[in-house]
Length: 438
Image (cartoon, rainbow, N blue to C red; front, side, top):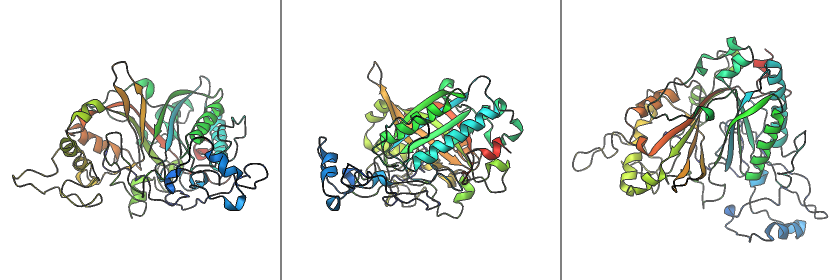
């Protein structure tokens, strides 16, 4: 868990793609019969205004009110991200409240032709659902009453995909398997895969609706290899925009690369003249299921937790002083000559300037998959990081963490995947078309 994750909320109420600024809120069909109220005007959460409605009758009360008197609690449902663009959605967008990660393997006998048809179906479904429309085939109506809720769908290809489709010559060198790390305890059944889909939304039903549509679209062409569910803080849950916290209670997201930085694209996206050509404007994503050993972590006094991370638990500020965004003073010592930020603190080890400039755009989800017979929670982080080249992003940082991160005793890497995520689809294209039809 590097010290560079996306802040939860630094966006307007109708958030858009971080680099394109294309998203606008959209007005949907009318609401309850005779009211003339947009179905999206009926959506919202209490967090944006401080209002709390009872579980029974809250939405109905709004639907029954005269159209002119209706004031939505928030615009969570209205948020829309555009499907078509230079980059795929779900990379630079802010953290979303609900996420699903799912990997597929092509079915026996399925090859390039079947893969192309599947990506065409998935792209059409993504375009429709991200616009708040119904899917083309057998819509389940799970999200019937909701707006797009900032839904994003992102598609990628695993190392094994290229042999299955006869496209080995088009497989990027950057997609070579990740090296082994000493902290790995990987479950192969929950790692890698031919195809990968990331789904994110600010409403759980909208996210599930998309998940179900993607699974149904796979049909006989592909079968699910693994699937993971995650979450983040909901928009409007805090009194003001602030960086999210992970399940260890730590502020997690202070030093993520920002799209406004001059070298952001170079670090995160494959250049237009990159190799192979079909990956132009794409990115490589590393996915890790990192279990947090919360019972052990929570036994530590807060001061010891802060020394492990290198930041104050209360506000995320570096132990060297200042506020959350203050530059960390790695040389500062206390009255006894000890480093204020310990030499093995997680935040020190993961800093780009301590790793030859290596940086990743992190966009994770927390997860909780229940409690075992001994009362131990299966919970942690679905680590999702983006970079132009994992050999210059994820790998050097993880190798350094392997050599002495104070956080290592409290986490366990249980699943892993690396996927090539091509650039966004232009109008009339589907994701991956330049690979599959090139």
